[in-house]
Image 1 (cartoon, one colour):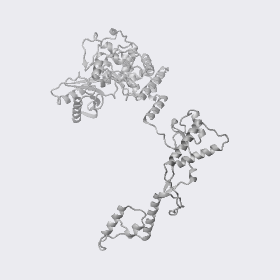
Image 2 (cartoon, rainbow, N blue to C red):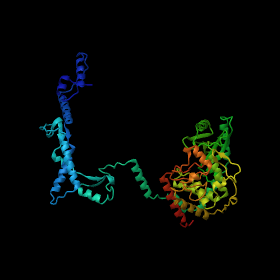
Image 3 (cartoon, helix red, strand yellow):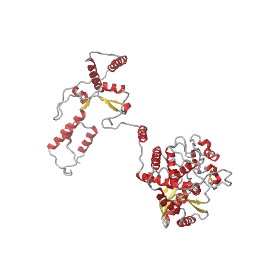
Image 4 (tube, helix red, strand yellow):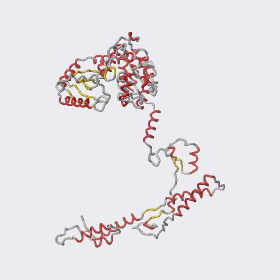
Length: 561
């Protein structure tokens, strides 16, 4: 740090704080003897002089602030307009203008009555090598009158997202007379985007998406126009083989061996379910496994309890410590928490959960696929269609299977789940919480339904009709309801039509009611308070509807295959 000579420094400095001067003067009093002083680099007198001049110039520039009273600019605009009107031979006056002029005169009088401070310009003060400028009290630099003429007005309309209307009053009046034509063709004002609220941006995005037709992916077009028989030849055989595999027994044994040592006093049972077991899976499908620890099969939890999450974490530690399993992921925040793991001996990925309703849903699908094989073929096709449309993130394979079941119920090809769970046809009920988990496994003929023979033309025709049905379905008013299995199940009336087991549960658990305030409602036929498509957004639903309509049109076109 270099300390300058206070005698020369403070006298030449233009402005300084009292505290700063006292600080440097204190240093000067404590200055050491010449023999003990620290040697500093000599600075020439020329550099000191230049520095002092630069500091003085900088201080002077800070003092000379540019001044313009806001009324000065407004008065300039008013006088300019007044002179332009006075040049016309035919002057006109209307009541609105009369009122405004009176208000202006009264406003000026009030302003002058308050005796505002009058600023008088002083003589010009030279600053460095610059031209002299007129300065007023307090070092203010006035804006010369000639500079005011360079500022011009530009009118913009706030109703048209700040569209630039023009620079004259005539153009502004013309814009209003035409009732805001062609809003905002000029884009951003002054290179900046207009300020929009979050709600406005969302509304604009929704409107833009509503007008946009989403094109069907090329792979989906190839599926719709390709050889359906060839597709089923591969996929049906694979799906059928995945229903029963010897590797599943090894997975069950290894799971029991892993868990019994940790839970020696509680019975452990393994239940396999999911697309592999129902007969619509692929080689990349996971094997879903329900682990029943301590006879928890009949326990229902709308959201996992602390005890369930504790047991799930214990299982995670067991899988991490085992050499026969590899942890992939643990999802605790889901409605049904799962552990995604891989059985190293078989290479099959498994989703481990502690909820039995998935197993119950699988039993229902297995029964329907075995009694009416058309449903299985349609689900295999639509599973492939969903994957190629990239809609599986919001519409699951199980959701699509329920939509197939509902469509076939309306075609009188499947019975309603309500009929299958009727007390007369179901002597012994198996309950999971309030929900009936089993059903009467009668033949279709016993329930008054005809079993039809499956053929490729029939599958193609029914798939086309399904796409047409869901492309024109009124999702705002009606819901997909396999439980009742009838047409036009109104969303507004569904809560009143529910069986007593639902109304009683919903009364005791109001936060667990069926989520009907969603863009798409597909009700689980066993867990009646579950909307399996509650995650579907409006945009995803529109995409699904557009894809259904386009696929139906392609299937209606005769194919050489």
